[in-house]
Image: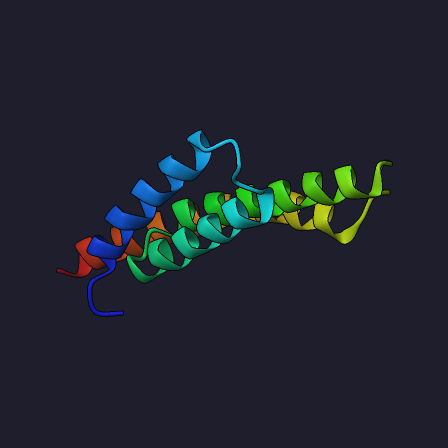
Length: 106
């Protein structure tokens, strides 16, 4: 991707429009969150990337529950969300450690 900051600007604008449009469906909103995840990953902002991915998963899970009109049992999606929270903290720790090492070696 050549201009991730420009893409981030427009995706953020699109997300705001989608959130305020009552006709926006959960899968469309989830797709925008996943696109934001990709941009944040490109920008090496992994904590934000994980946040957007988790929001996407939660939106889709709730959408599927509504379609099924019953509770979805404890599924892999719930495990993904729990794992994502643990991974987010691990990524932050690793990032902080690598940043400190780079500063120490400079």
